[in-house]
Length: 89
Image (cartoon, rainbow, N blue to C red; front, side):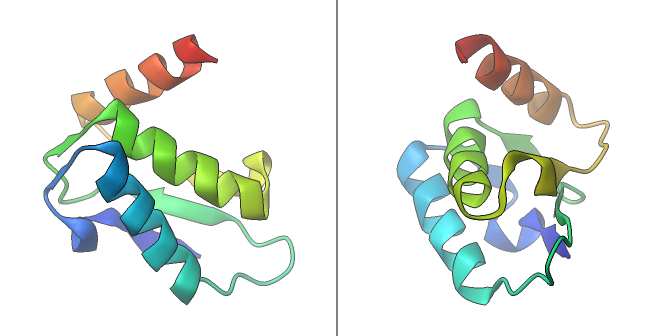
């Protein structure tokens, strides 16, 4: 199941906004057993580490770390945000 993050805005920042987005995602998500939840960053200009961390933590708490993946992107802010999140863990 693919989630197009562009629908939550072109610039995704702040932990409260990430929490709100995660709640909205989970309200609509109904992945089949074992189905991967894919985060698609196409059309997103920038992502902050706090926003992405909030979304990933929330979705992974419900669906498991291995089922929630970020699709490959050339967006540097996504790559840097993922690095920051991984470094903090």
